[in-house]
Amino acid sequence: MSVEQRLQELEDRIAIRELIDQYTYTADTRDAEGQMAIFTGDANFEVYMDEKEPTPTQVVTGRKNLRPVFDDLNQYLSTMHFNGQSTLKLNGDKATGVIYCRAYHLKILDGAQKLMIAGIRYHDTMVRQDGVWLFSERKLKVCWIENR
Image (cartoon, rainbow, N blue to C red; front, side, top):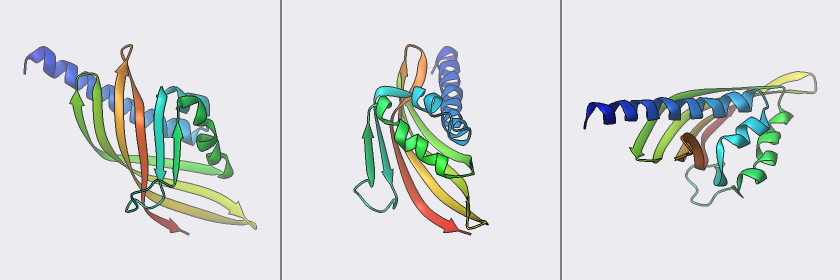
């Protein structure tokens, strides 16, 4: 691999990490428009409330249809997502990866704080369109949930 190719791969990895972090930032700041903007127009988004189940709990196709998914976070007083390790495989203008995330969701119910913590693995496909990396497929797989 040439020096130029290595530099391009490094730039791509940084851009993809920024995409991953932008997703969690827009979720925590309730910026549904910003969250939708980092998906391709024909994106596929799947939610698996149990990662062991082969059938998704929810499937949403198309960027414009993602708003209700992201607006669902408005039920929480606050959320905080922490991205952990990730594995990425790059192939030109396409990349795949698994991203680990711990998501904290705070509600107030009957005057008491309720905290739901979820261990999540995202199985992602990203593509570069017009020089920008976007999610073309995101499979949100819940590994476990803890309620406090």
